[in-house]
Each structure stands twice: as structure tokens, then as C-alpha cells.
Amino acid sequence: MSNQYRVIDEKTWDRAMHCMVFRNSIEPAFCVTFEVDITNFKRVVKERGLSFTMAMVYAVCKCANEIEAFRYRFVDGQIVLFDRIDTAFTYLNKETELFKVVNVPFIDDLEEYCGLALRTAEEQKEYFTGPLGNDVFQCSPMPWVTYTHISHTNSGKKDNATPLFDWGKYYEKDGRIMMPVSVQAHHSFVDGLHIGQFAEGLQSYLDKNIL
Image (cartoon, one colour):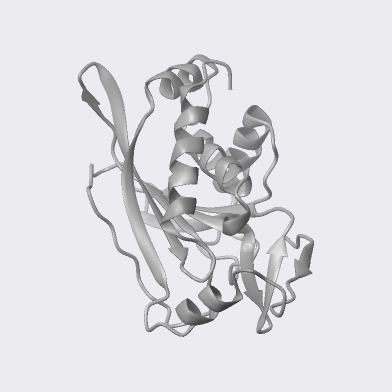
């Protein structure tokens, strides 16, 4: 996958100073966990006969794509802004209990994306098909635990600005179905404000009766 991007002129970029400060941090990424109400989303996905996991990958990546801050990356030392970001997600091989990492281009149609993603995941034999590109969102569902916090391994590469999205086991609360969602992002590009925008956008999308 290779999406179009434009190189940012750091001399005129409003965020240049903030980017430089966080880029040189020992740990430039930060992670936030929040809850979402999936009551309507889960019902509609079930009615349509779609994979809940693939539908969540779609929802998360659709909402993240709509926020510019999540589409910035470092490429060959330069700061770039991608027009679109594709998807990568973990998919469990139930026989071996090992996961594989699956890459699927983002298609802005729920049913079409879910169909392609599920076929690709089931047909892929390798656990890893190669290093992930810069132009993906990494999604890793963890449906076995309703967690309140999550952390990730650190590659030590400070210029790795690929956002990570996780979600845990959903549960019922006051007649609604709730689920934890986590976002890890590079602070050079993403602030708490943008996490808030993503959380609000995701909840708005999940609330829709017609997806």
C-alpha cells in the first residue's frame, strides 16, 4: 500500500515547535483509554451479518482518517501529511493461538470493507507479511479482557508515528453495552484535544442506527 502525501514545510508550519519538543522525548508516544457505548452499533452489525471485529476496525479507521493530526508521519526525516491512511489489524489463528498481522486498504463502505478484510485475514497464511508501512493505522482487538489501561511494546524508534488502536471485552452497564477503547499516538502530531475529537467522532458514528 502506498498512499499520496505532501511534505510539510517546517519553517511555516504552526506545529513545528511542538513537534520538535516531543520528537526528542525519551517516550514520544502517549496512550489514552476511554469507554464507548456500542449498543446501537452492535445491533446493526449483527442485523447485517457482519464481523464485529472488522466493523470496529472500519469504524475506528474511518473516524481517525477524518482527523488531520492522525495522518501525519515522519518519512525519511521529513514530516508529511497523508491524504488517506489504510488499515492493519491482528487476527487470531485459533488453531495455533498465534496472531497474524493483516493489511487491508481502507474502503469507505462498511460492508465492502468488512467483506474484503475478513477474506484477506482468512486467506493469509503468513503471520507477518513484512514491515508495516507508514500509511496504516494499527488495530489490535483484545476481546478477552475489559481493561481500564493498556500499554504497548516500544520499538525504540522515535520517528515511528503510527497510531495504535485497541479495544477490549464489552460488557453491560445500566442496560447499555460498553467497551474500552485505547489510542496510542505520537505527541509530535497528536494532543489530548485530538484524542477527544476522535472519541467524540467515534461515539457519534457508533450511535448511528444506519451505518
